[in-house]
Length: 259
Ligand SMILES: [Zn+2]
Image (cartoon, rainbow, N blue to C red):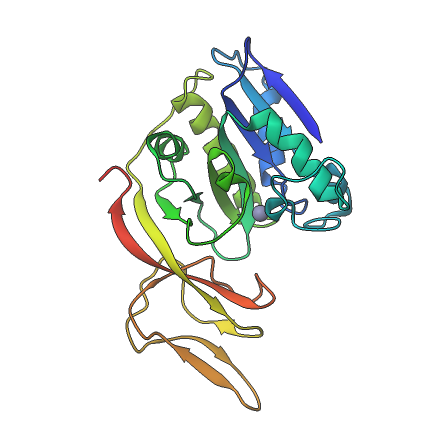
């Protein structure tokens, strides 16, 4: 794990990249911003989490790091020990946690704890959509006040550009560096259900409302099936091949984040 602190004093802001080793956009964004040697008016801790998984271009070595918190320094798995090493260094910080996905090319933010601090962090990312994922158990942002951002499709340049823009906006909005930034007023969605099932083709589009009765996923071949919405919802993190045994999540639109 690579941890560096920029600026004077004890940081109350942290940026985390590569909880998943094959999601490099956050690492690229951090390296691009820090390469410019910006002046930090407020200290920030940067962590590139799973370097061993990055080296092998895999999500994790032994287990999903984002499901390994709080971890155990004597733990059996690489990620359990890594989680125990990372968490104390960022526990009191407002955290920006950068990811990429198989589901959606545009960036969106995820909140697990809903409070004024996490809402401010989410606005500081400048993204247009924020999803309350408190329905889904686990993840770093259950253990800290933080916002996770899905920056775009894994391995794409667009995800790297999004991550860099989001990081600059976040550092600018929080007053850590001098940068043009925009707080915005993102729309808020709330996940209320996970849709299980393997080998389904997701035929909808994330954040585009699926009406009651509409088919949103199908399985071809012998015993092929269609999944129809029993109520209207917004797909979030839904994809054909993003998860082994799950299509993704159903969400409702709540309003805007500051309502
Ligand atoms: Zn991830």
